[in-house]
Image (tube, rainbow, N blue to C red; front, side, top):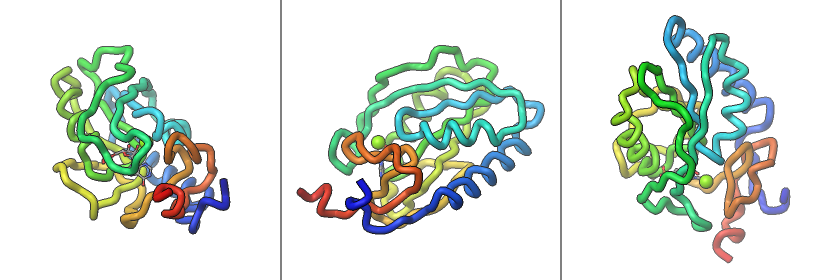
Length: 179
Ligand code: IMP
Ligand code: MG
């Protein structure tokens, strides 16, 4: 697995610092609100698990799975709900937790779908942002870190469903996906 990584972009310690900062910011902003964290599976599994423990407020969590990437490295643009939420969004201050904002297509479709369900408010927390690749207009209030236009894996992020369990985030060697 390690042999497929070109360089480490964020170490475990750096990820911990990023997530702590996000958690503190969210704690500050959502005091007195009715926070519901929605993790978009599977990429946000690591950040969700760490972030929720850095939020010092009562909150609920739920999960949703959508399809955007297949085994390639580009978003399809069609967001299909594979697993929907268990609870109704009405009255909740919804915070979507996503691994990475790339073209923005996934999150912009998701925002459209979820805002019709009448949450009290809706914001996005994306661990990473790849602004150079943006095609759809999406605003994420909480961003962990900006990343260059390279394909990254680890800490939840995959290539072809692999590398999610790397404890750090690294740039995947292009020869892995150009094969
Ligand atoms: P978007 O619709 O192009 O913004 O794609 C968002 C989704 O693509 C993310 O939730 C990730 O699952 C995936 N993705 C985008 N860039 C990367 C990357 O560099 N590594 C791993 N997955 C990525
Ligand atoms: Mg993915």
